[in-house]
Image (tube, rainbow, N blue to C red; front, side, top):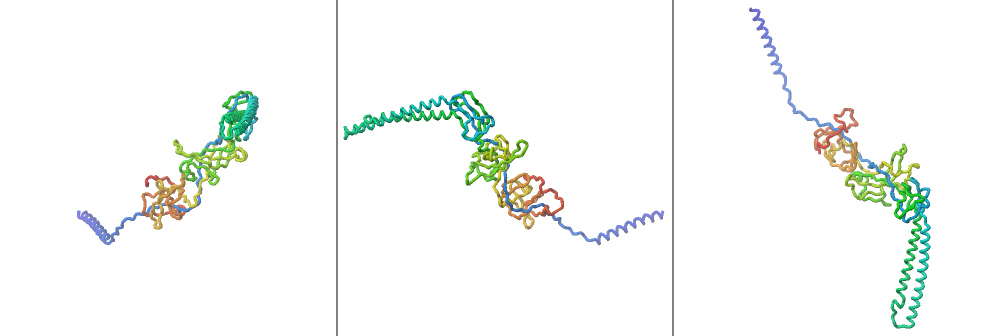
Amino acid sequence: MSRKLYTVFGTLGIFVVLILIVSIMNSLREEPELQEPVAAAPAVFFTTAQTQSVTLDVNAQGEVRPLTDINLTAQVSGRVIETSPSFVNGGAFDEGDMLIKIEDTDYRAAVAAAKARVAQAEQTLRLEEAEADLARRDFEELNPNETPSQLTLRIPQLAQARANFEAARAEMEAAQINLQRTAIRAPFPGRVRERIAGVGQFVSPGAQLGRIFSTDVAEIRLALTDNDLAKLGLPLAFVETENNPGPNVALSARLAGKNHNWQGRIARTDGSIDSATRQVIAIAVVDDPYGTGADNGTPLAMGLFANGVITGKPYENAIVLPRSALYGRDKVYVISDDNTLIERTIEIVSSDRDTITLASGINSGERIVISPLRGAGEGDEVAPTDPQNTDEPSPLSASATRNVTSRE
């Protein structure tokens, strides 16, 4: 029994000694100094703004159309006795070429009869002029102090003879014009879209003989947005002049399995905005598309759907930034010399999927944030990092998609 008590008291003694040792050691240890937590500045990527010369081209598409596309109609009646070898579907002709000939026998006879009436009316007029002159002299000899009447001087008869002569001449001119109209000539250089009339067919005035279009100029209607007009520096209702030519247009299309290119220019723009699309139509023109304007012999054919690249106006001191630098619609953040954020309002002259081009709002050499700010804003301190000089992975890439409306 005494041995068990000895064991129990011995164990308790050991515990007491250990507790005392621990208490002494804790009393000798220094208390740790309490420090306030310091918030680290958020890391951001930046790019350095640099001015450069930028030309803002505009891409558009449109269908090639002729400047003039008309129905060829008869102005006189008669039987078609001849057609030009060029008057076939797809045939080419020059200005003044005869395309259709209508029988002209009756019209030649009408011209001859009109000439006879002119000669007769002229003879009558000359006789009346002679008689009027004779009547004046007779009256002056017999009645030197009196005033003759118009009837005495045969003035009404002379006026009637002169009017008959002018009417006869007008009839002769009309007969000659009708004779000329029996030969239907091309009013411009062009091609035949469709032939309708042929040899032996009787036609009346106004009858459709065919359909032709001009090939001296080709037009391409290109739809532009308001942003496109700003890039090109084109106003509404623009019309080119010798001193103010329109911007150049590089046209391209795939034809017969090959890519072809043609050069044109913007000649004018519509004076109104399309109410359905809210766009403005710019008309590009190509001179002599089937001749000198062709691409190594390949014409800019009518009806072809072509792509156009319009040369925009140059900006000598523009700044191009990644689109990830844009916050909201027109805000960017500049990193100051003391690494704090400054909000700037910018003027965007062009934007695409990856970049924005600025005309003002940023100075060359300034550091522009191109990564998410993670809650930081105007006046906050950041830790700027140049993505081109670091191998550390970014929490979010500079080109990562950002909810731009969160800071609008």
